[in-house]
Image 1 (cartoon, rainbow, N blue to C red):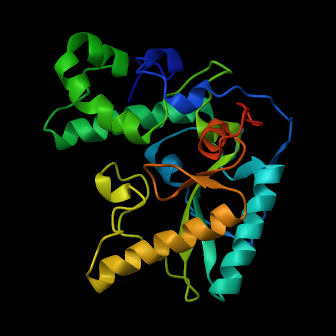
Image 2 (cartoon, rainbow, N blue to C red):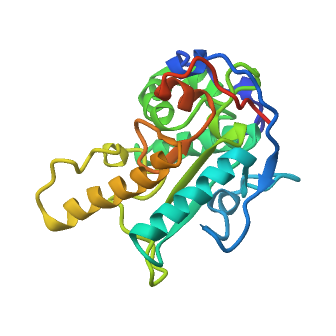
Amino acid sequence: MPSDHSPSAVPQPPTPTYRNVPIEECHDPLVPIPSGRVVVTEPHPYVLLGASYGEASPWMLRRGVLDALLAAQDALEARQPGWRLKLFDAYRPVPVQTFMVWSEFGRLAGLAGESLADFSDPADVQRRRPDLYQALAPTVFEFWALPSDDPRTPPPHSTGAAIDLTLQDAAGREVDMGSPIDETTERSHPDFYAQATSPQQVAFHQHRELLNEVMTGAGFRRHGNEWWHFSLGDQMWAWTEGAPRAIYGRI
């Protein structure tokens, strides 16, 4: 893993359009997600990988975002009695974002038969192996937001306004959505199974649509590349919604 987890260690790809949206912080507090209403993934998957949250907890959201999440749970329960929203990740401090970006570089390098053990961070890869960096970076940054300490361009999860989640059925089983959360392939695109004809793949699309409908009905908007990522009030939400500004910046 990198010796320097600072966001400045990550080379800067072109700024995504949504990160040009201005932020007018509303100072809604970050609050704990109550147990019982929704399900959380334990142990937390990024903690298992070695990410350090310090004094922070991943199971926190802005108060207004939490209210909307609980409204989405009510809508799901009305449509599918006993079903629950299952949270994979919520609040993500910038150092955790940096850690996960580097972890994804390492994972993809391994799949390509390369090792990043002798490199310290993505910038080091870019300097010493520009060919490898160019092979990995487009996939990493298609799915992972660039870490940033600039208050004008916070990673979505670092605002407390973004959440990764899936569905759990009445028997307590995680619903099959056709790809796992954080998979960096085309299968993760929300409409990947929209034209499917096999019953299993049709069900994948129906499950994704159900999740999207209950979340957007509560005010969230979905990431264009990820069926599991939803936000409310951050820059990505504002850009998708056509709002003039975001109301949640980095915490």
